[in-house]
Image (cartoon, rainbow, N blue to C red; front, side, top):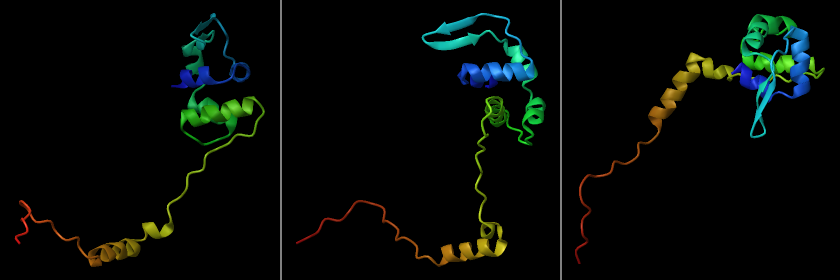
Length: 126
């Protein structure tokens, strides 16, 4: 997953991250159908350098998701302000047991839908 994110990053960003983390280019660039398959950096070198701990140390973040950390590393290496998606918190009342009990009571008081009768419909006699 990290390598596919690595290849999707712009070339300038990859080079900046490689310089910061000391990743050396050892191979050739391989392109197939206008898609970069290999960019000269080895997967083992990238994974060894871009560990969660190393990326946390570089960004100063306590995030544990490697994909989010990699985005933060890319932004910082390019000199951009990192954008972190904020997770909306559940309303406090949803965690309140009294609120949950009231929701259950409200459901119990709702009228039940009429049951359908089984069988064939009757023909109207004239």
